[in-house]
Amino acid sequence: MDQRHVVWFEDIGMQDVPQVGGKNASLGEMVRTLRAEGVRVPDGFATTAAAYRSFLAANGIEEAIRAKVEQYQAGDESLRSAGEALRELFLDSEFPDELAEAIRAAYRALGEREGRSNVAVAVRSSATAEDLPDASFAGQQETFLNITGERDLLDACRRCYASLFTDRAISYREVKNFDHLDVALSIGIQRMVRSDVGGSGVMFSIDTETGFPGSVVISAAWGLGETVVQGTVNPDKYQVFKPLLDSPGCSPIIEKSLGEKARKMVYSQGGSARTRMVDASVAERQSFVLDDADILRLARWAALVERHYGRPMDMEWAKDGETGELFMVQARPETVQARKSASRFTVHRLIGSGPLLATGAAIGDSIASGPACVIRDPADIAGFRPGSILVTEMTDPDWVPVMKLAAGIVTDHGGPTSHAAIVSRELGVPAVVGTGNATAVIADGGAITLSCAEGDLGHVYEGELPHETEEIDLGELPHTRTAVMVNIASPAAAFQWWRLPADGVGLARMEFIINNLIKIHPMALVHPERVTDDGARRQIADLTRGYADPQEYFVDTLALGIAKLTAPTIRTR
Image (cartoon, rainbow, N blue to C red):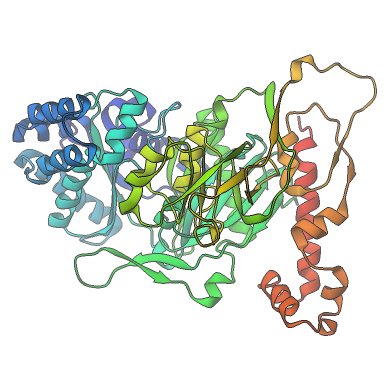
């Protein structure tokens, strides 16, 4: 194999970021160092930055790229027209023979390793300025799934190169002050995991909203993982308490929330499209993607990855529906909570009230008020009013230029690991995602208040409500001889206080767990036949779906609520 142009994952590591980009370097690092500890990574190879440079040179397009970028930066050409012209330069180019043959030869060798020809692969972009500790570049370049055959592989690689100049990638590099010509693109070609008939998702080794380091947060949906990353579905959410993962007999799962998961991405049959969206079955919508054993295995992998890299990590995983095997398919540094101070935090409080319009997952912990700007069609992005609260169905990287101008963001779809959530955290903009109905119930131009200060459930209220902010320096808190404990009511807000030097939970309010988490009177679960109201019966059936005995729903949910209340105050050594 010509290692100037193509390298196997097992031959690269984090020291090779300049040659294969952050994504591919991390895949190689996991293959080399963590596979022996049981972390599964699908086999594959990467093209190099040198291969990208040879592509530019062979087609003589570098000067044309530079000229077009300068026209955009000077304001002589719009982002849209400049981006389109830049991508066309790549799409109209051909691979030099030496590079094309290196890719084809490696693809054939991958097929030999897998024991079949024309193996289906994921073709993934990995920029050399990507997955860095201070800039994630999440979703800026393209990924192409279920690619088979040498001709289609080369076409997907060409489109990966072109995606280095998507409008969103150009805009993001401008924001982060990266020189467009200094960034090269590596391509990862990796065996597809049959998650189209299984499930997939995203995982963080830290609580993404509060920075609590003792939690692993997992999102899961049926089918290919693009739906979770893009925020087109409301996924399952699981949380695991890391310090007890290795304790014999412990199953330290502290949250299991069943997501709607109404749609899924699967392989396409016939035609040029490689994937398609379909409706999830009723059984899939009512079932968790992962069982407890899978949740704990992924959490242990997250802890191993975090320990190896020495920092909180953002990961992607997939479950093969044919074999039942789990795989790690990406790991990169978490870029938001890892940069925050552990000795200072800010507390935001609403001091007014108004009609509740919508609820969803809270992203961040602050509060924003202002006029709503409802945009249902991405074609209308240019109509966004700076300083407004963006209300839309979902976002993708093309929305970043307006997201950074928003006072807050509200979406119908997506979870805590969706694109809207990731970018909102990085921009420091509060968001409420996965409301289900925001675009239907919020009036364009109407005054609203978005609150992420009430736990992991975000609220959108009618009107501009007054609120206050308090800065707390934990270093100034006095030491006491008396053990000071916290009084906690709602599990949703428990992680907000992990930085406090508390000695445990002194009082936990069980009625708040019942009201806010279980949402059903205990006696209605003991005697469901006595519930005569049809609406209440439907609500109880919806909340307890997946449980043969509704009393087990009460026991499980109460146990998870108590566990989540206590987790942030447990001091493990």
